[in-house]
Image (cartoon, rainbow, N blue to C red; front, side, top):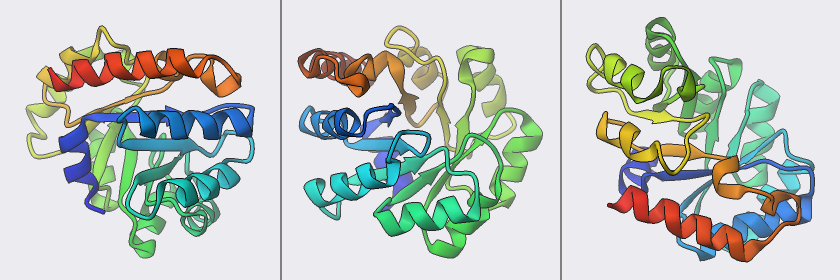
Length: 206
């Protein structure tokens, strides 16, 4: 899988994190059915590896399904074994270099210019600008000046109203968690999740 191409094409990465494995899995499948083509399951979710395994079986080998909040070498290996096709980290961590050894693309968390340089040196496929809400679209624009060739994916506090600001400032995609998932990961309304997915997809495609 070419993660950069997937991000540039689809522009929306859904982040699934929740305490109810059945509800989280249902959320992943509902997102896929709704046209969301990139989904990350955070390892902080209950039975995250089980969710990834089940989703991989249901969605097939080509769906862009990843694991998030991957911090350690062991996390990276377990996520790969479960079927994750890419890894996402909240910060620069041992999992970033391990992803390279595993042959998996990695979206590495960084906030400052120094961290952006370190992420690239560690082999990051793209930089997860986290938490994006600290600086907003303006901060992303400032980072893009010295790093015009870096693929940035803002995550953290991104909602439907702020998506266009980030994309217009040069983000290749945005990562969205609770503003998209809502209560679906806790057994909430999947029809409402479909509606929110449609809203976000309309914004990123506009």
